[in-house]
Amino acid sequence: MNIHIFLVALMTGAVVQAAPVVFQSSDQQTALLEVYTSEGCSSCPPAESWLSKLKNDPGLWQECVPVAFHVDYWNNLGWTDGLSSEQYSERQRSYARAWSSQEIYTPEFILNGKEWHNWLGFRGAPASSAARNGVLMVRSEDGKHWQANFSPPGGVGTDYEVTAALLVSGISSDVRAGENSGRHLIHDFAALSLVTRPLTSQTNGFAGSFIIDGSPKNIKGQLALAVWVTRAGNLEPLQATGGWLPANGQK
Image 1 (spheres, rainbow, N blue to C red):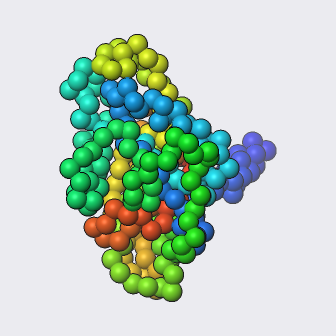
Image 2: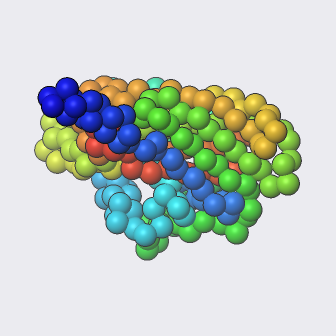
């Protein structure tokens, strides 16, 4: 009898398996909203407070995918931002070079690869555009190894890349120096890691894979994944998708 119960338990465990995590866009372009920010910048908290409101927006993930990149060039002015990365600063500089601009600043909003100045008076998430740029789908069985598939309209072929950012929301910081000294800051959609990988041509579109570390910097919070596809060597997104990840980082 005990053996029978044990076998039933094994069989039940074999049948009851967690479903994979899947995020998928429609063929209509989902907006990618990037915010370049820093805990060392006194102008940034209002921008991040605005961004935090998107957590409850019905268009989140389906119409707009937000990412907050904390830059590191404020770190030498009295306070080191624990979320900052030189990689994010370089990404911002790459945009400036693409625009033939000599200026980078915080907070800077970039919407679908272009500077966006209307965020302060904007209510809700930016809507998806009317462009039909194809469908982007990402899938993972374990929360770490991800498969990306992109189906451009009409199967138009070119060289594509997929970029993925692991995000964290619901975390805070007590700033003890610099321009925000004494302030308690709340962060949402903050990038913890960023990877870019090539997509290769397949029978029904383009495919590739990437790996996400589920606990970079040992920062705990509500995790999400933002993913977008571009033409190779280009920063301007063609399509984006994403969503909240399971609480334990696994499925």
